[in-house]
Image 1 (cartoon, rainbow, N blue to C red):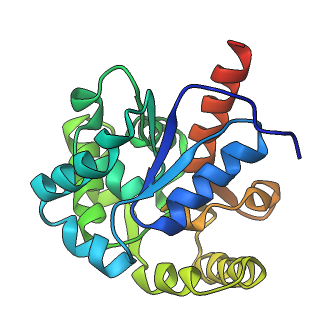
Image 2: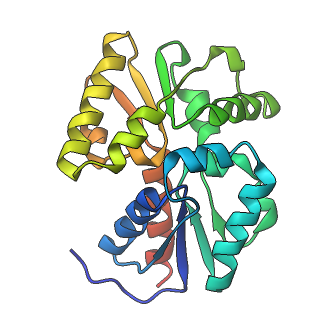
Image 3: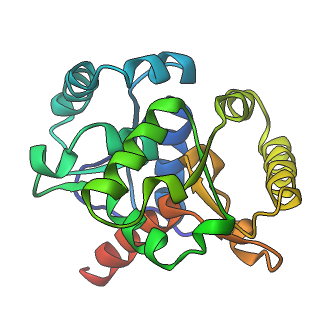
Length: 218
């Protein structure tokens, strides 16, 4: 593992400490120091908060602004869609909405399963594709799996992988040939090596692009 190198003050924000720490740790293993901020303490609390976008923004500002950060990474799919972060922090924020247009325009929608954390994200995703003219929202097969998210937060890394492999197999057995991990809790690098199912992981894609941008500029 490479030693973290000094960069500007970078914060990784997630719905809970689980995904924010996951994103920050990934950056550290690639030589970038980052701190982690979770908006809520656990998934159910964050799921309830998503029903009130103004409160999400207020909580976000309360936690992020005191850090005097120079760059913000929203390592959470649900959080990325609930508030227009790029309009609020136009010069220093990375979030996940931009990756969905590319995925939905190239994926085989009839056999694509989109796995998200909770119900609000289903509505936000459908509104997103409709407002951007990407596809018919009714063509999307989106599944809310807060049950899986809750389990992951209580498991070891080994057991997390075991649970996620089982989940992927369940959707394959339902006839899905492509899976979009619409929650960063679900992201695992090894899924990119699967040959019998295509797995999209916008969270990991964003982190890699961030790493490439910042290492190239050194």
